[in-house]
Structure formats: structure tokens, C-alpha cells
Length: 167
Image 1 (tube, one colour):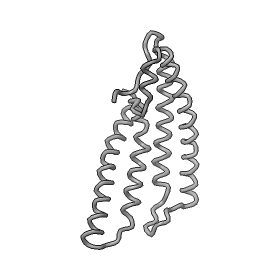
Image 2 (cartoon, helix red, strand yellow; image 1 turned 45 degrees about the horizontal axis):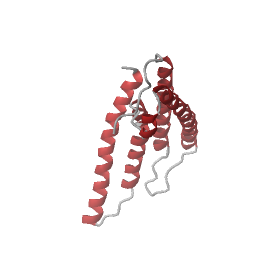
Image 3 (cartoon, one colour; image 1 turned 60 degrees about the vertical axis):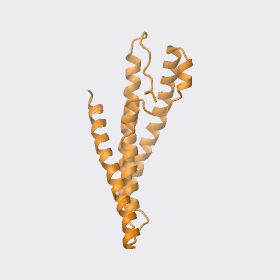
């Protein structure tokens, strides 16, 4: 198991905990507003920050399992070699897009830190928190795609390319 695989697994465990935390925060928010008529201001942003973190940081793990939405109808009708080419072209396009997104995430994180960006709410948490999750997730996703492309290039010609997970 590679270092990236171990990191992805640790992130998935942390993301599961963060998802539960977001659910608890939102449940608390609803209960406090309904039963005690107490206005809430931090709960929605806290849940959003947690879910942004979960979404971005787990993207490399999803890519490692090829668990993203795929067009199964196309892969089913293509010969294995043509499907391998299709996967490689999709990976190149994904690598370019995610690489650009990762780079922009780094610049957004830098701006948020140096310019002290905060949200517009009364709680006003710093925006470097979700930008850090976005930067880390997109960087790991870009690395995951690049490593998968290298593995595909090293694969013997007789082996078919990996398929997405069955649904």
C-alpha cells in the first residue's frame, strides 16, 4: 500500500467523523431554534466548512477507486484497447483541469491568509479554513490522477485498463 493510499484511507476516516459532526451541528441548530427560539449564526457555516472539507479531501480516494460517475454504456461497447485510450484521454483532461484548480486553490489560500479574509457572517470565521481543504483535496486529486496515469502506462498491453466500480 502506497503512502498516498494510506493518506487517503486516513482522510476517509476523518471525513466520516466530519460528516457526523456536520449532521450533529445542523441537528443542534434546528433543535435550538425550534424548541428554545434561540437564533443561530455559526451552525450553518460550521456545517458548510465541514462538508466542503469532506468533499474536497476525499476526492483523491474516490478517484483511486474510480468511483466517480462514469459512462458505463460507452465502456461496455468499446473494445478493451479503445476503452483504455478513452480512459487515458479522460485522465489527461482531468489532470489538466484538476491541476489548474489545485493551482488556483493555492493562490486563493495564500490570498485568504495574507489578506485576512473572513466570511460575511457575525461569526466571521477565516476563509483560509475551507480554502485549505480545497487546496489539499485538489492537490491530492491531481497527484492521484497523475499516479494512475503512470500506472496505466506501465501496465502490459495484454491487461485491460481498470474499469470504474460496478453500481
